[in-house]
Structure formats: C-alpha cells, structure tokens
Length: 366
Image (tube, rainbow, N blue to C red; front, side):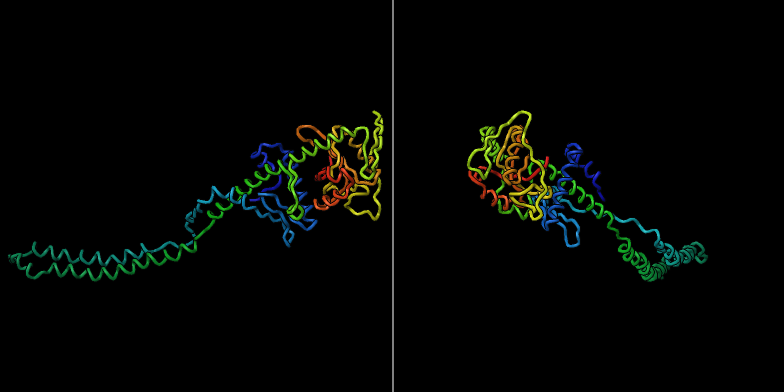
C-alpha cells in the first residue's frame, strides 16, 4: 500500500489534531534537513526516533531507533500470523474414486445375492422330507460365508489407494500465502503511522541536530536559553543608549531619534570571502548553520541599530525574532558557522565580555 504526501498529511491531522498547515510546515522542515545533511555527506538522526540517510543507490532509508521499535511493536509481540486455507482449484480434475467404487463392489454384493436363493429354496422345495439336521452336518452355509471374505479384502485395498494418492499431491500445488502477506502489510502500515505521529509530537517540542556535529557537544536547553535571554536582556536595557562594538574598548554613544534608525545595508561579498565565518558580509547561502548571540532586546529598532554598528565594525550581524517565556525578543548575533564546534571556537575569540556572555543558536530567517 502506497501513501503519498496528501494522504500522509491527512492521517497525521486525524491522529494529532493539528492544523494541516502546521503538519505540512513541519514535514517540509524535516525534508529540508534530510536533504541538507545528505548534501554534506551526512545522516540525520533524531533522538529516540531513528536515522535518515541515503544508501549507495541514492535511495532514502530509515532505520528506527530501538526505543521506537520497542514502543510500537510491544503490543504486537504476542501475536502470531494466521494462515488462511486456500480455495480449491477448480481447474484440477475431480477424483473418480466414486466411479471405480461401484464396479469393484458389484461382484462382492451380487455374489451372495445369487447363491442365497438356492440355500433358502432348498428347505421350501424339499419333497423328500429330509430332516433339517442334515443341513447342519453338511454346513453348507458356513462355506458360502467364507467365499466372499477373501474376495472383499483385496478389493478394498486399491480403493483406499485411489482416495489417498491424489489428496497428498494436490495441497502443495494450491498453497497460497495471500492471507499472511495481508496481515504483515497491515502491521507495517500501523508501525509507519504510529512512528510518524510520535515523530510529529517530538519534533514540535524540540529541535534536533545532525549526528556528526552534536555527538560530543553540550546541549543548550530551553531553561538555559531563558537565563541567557534574561542576562542579555538586562545588558540590552543598560546599553539602549550606548551600544559598544566588540572590537572597541570605548563606548560609542548612539543617538536614537524616533524617525531615524540605522539599518543594515546589504553589500556584495568579496570574491575571496568564504561561505562561513565571523567577519565579512552576511551570505544567504550560509543561513542553514549557527550564529553567536551576544545581545537580546525587547524592541526591534534597538536590535537593528546594534546590528548595524556591528556590521560597520566588520562582523556578520544578524537579527532574529524569538518567543521566550511568552514574550517576543530580538536576538542580535554575529557570524555564520557550519557546525556548533566552529561557532564555539569563534565565540572564545570575541573580546570581553562577549567571550563569556553569549550562547549559540541555529539561524532562523523570519
């Protein structure tokens, strides 16, 4: 049974109760992450769910995690497949054992019927008045009963052979496993739907990272991000009128008139500029990586003013809007990095206090 994308979205909406737009959006993000990892020659692993990768022939494969396989297959562990009896093949010739039965039994049945009247007629047509004890001494009836017995025994043997021989050969030819295949197909469909529903729940609650980049690095939780947001937010309130640049020791006083706000003017990148790095011009092709957050503001104008000053100092400055703790904040980050390890090394090279007061997040374009 094949399930296309519209059918899969319909099943997920029915199982999760989410809106179709949210389901399609999350599926699109998953597909983009799988393709992005494949272009870099890597696989995409989702914790407690499984591993997505492309094999040598270019076909997408999925290896479920042990936790997922155990959770889904647990309630089916005691079940056994049911094999249905196949239908009888109408093309086989009928067994003609019944046709052979009549001629073989006919002499056995007819033999005593012809001789018994002679035995019964003798006492009735006895004109000589012979006593009945004479027949007892002759024992004529006992001889007649013994004659059909040896004839009936050998005649029954070929009848049994005719019945059993075709029965042993026919069943293997008519054996059919359609019932077992149907049961296995239903179980596979249930596992697929259950796994997809479980993945949607886990995917909407947290973001996962690639296998090759997150195996040995610490994970920043939502609670840590809230603490960093509060710390950087306090700093943003204190520096709303004076915004320091990372490479300058003195404070630069920035006037903030209501009508004029500095803006980031896009500039063409240099020919020798690498795709990822801390300094230079922001490149759209590198927005699939990570960036170092050094400021967090409650107003967008303040965040963009700070980003403009950082751009003038040669940094790749980005502004991203996030919702943390139920309130909207604007993060100002510097640099575009392909992996978390590269971003962490670049953060240690920032001037004080930014080399200690920062955290790394994945770039998201609003």
